[in-house]
Image (cartoon, rainbow, N blue to C red; front, side):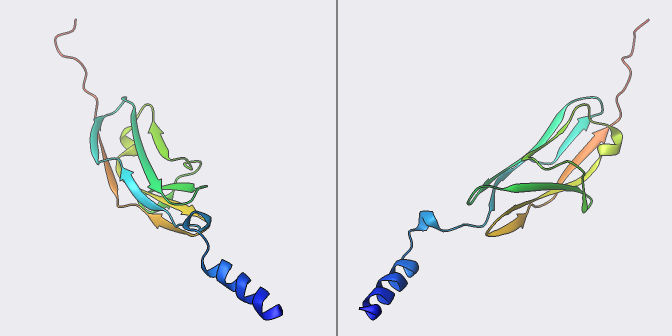
Length: 116
């Protein structure tokens, strides 16, 4: 009887349905690199596949950005100092993935010409 019970439990553990397993995150989509004029609003975003919940950490030049822990990174307004290369690391209980870099190029705003 004990062997039968152990056999049933082992079989159940090995044949657990896929929906019951944690799946590490993978990047489904990521914002493209962009060139924007300072003072405008710009958003970098990522969407992922895998088992929720996810945590997010955006980085600029490899350094964590404080409080940038959502699936989107919003610059409103974007400043020249925001110019750089950004990645995001997404983590869940099964693992983590880091995106490829996204370049944000910020150009100087120019004053309108011909205004008196």
